[in-house]
Amino acid sequence: MLRSRKDIYAYLSTPLLFLAVSFWLSRDGDDAMRQLSLAGGIGSTIFMSGLLTVPQFLFGDREDGTLLRLRGVPGAMTAYLTGKVFFVLVNIAVSIALLLLGGRVLLGAALPDTPQRWLTLVWVVALGIVAVVPVGAAVGALLPVAREALGLYMLPMMGLMIASGTFSQLRNLPEWMQNLASFFPLRWIAQGVRSALLPDSARVMEVSGAWQHATVAGVLGLWAIAGLVLAPRLLQRMARRESGSRLSEREQRRMAKTAY
Image 1 (cartoon, rainbow, N blue to C red):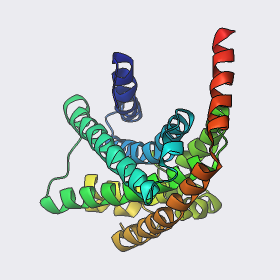
Image 2 (tube, one colour):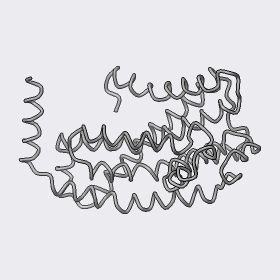
Image 3 (cartoon, rainbow, N blue to C red):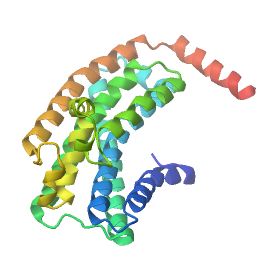
Image 4 (cartoon, one colour):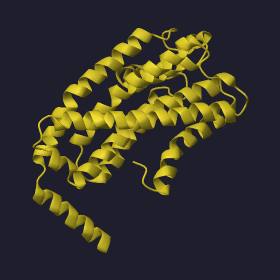
């Protein structure tokens, strides 16, 4: 939740960052690049919120004992994961609204021009969130408690954002990078968002020359199913390993660091 002015600034920084990237990439008046980079910002927002923000939530809930308290409650982990999906859904919706509004007002970017395109944007965003949030929870359950692990985890995530062609044409990247990106959801989220924001003539920029909506839905659906199956089990396993003594030990280490 946004509890302070600092939290609000941190929350607004992501859409502002992607608007700045869109402005810089389209500084020569390239309308196609403006739309491409705005779509990349929306896709990256979904990806980062699911795979980076959710593990951060888990670190906090593990350290303050929230997951320990849920350990003995039947179905608690599924309910916990559902709550996180909804929370991230609301936050991403606000961020995307800011990106679209800022892109239109500040950059002159075009919004979806038909109800069908708006519907495409909605289902791609919704399915993308359901695909990445459970995976983020599963990753958070597997990572060690130390926050340094999250910093190391961010490095391959940033590399995947580059390899997925979120801010450039994927077809211009080496074939092995295209194949790697095709396995992960970000490439398909970004492609689905592009299909809503760019004209149909822009399909030629895609690797296949088509928007591939069925493939987008299929890949994201498979990731969603895998995440929803694995994440509750991994969260339950993580919670079983928690104990009052471990929680107390972490609290003592944290207090010792603060004292120094």
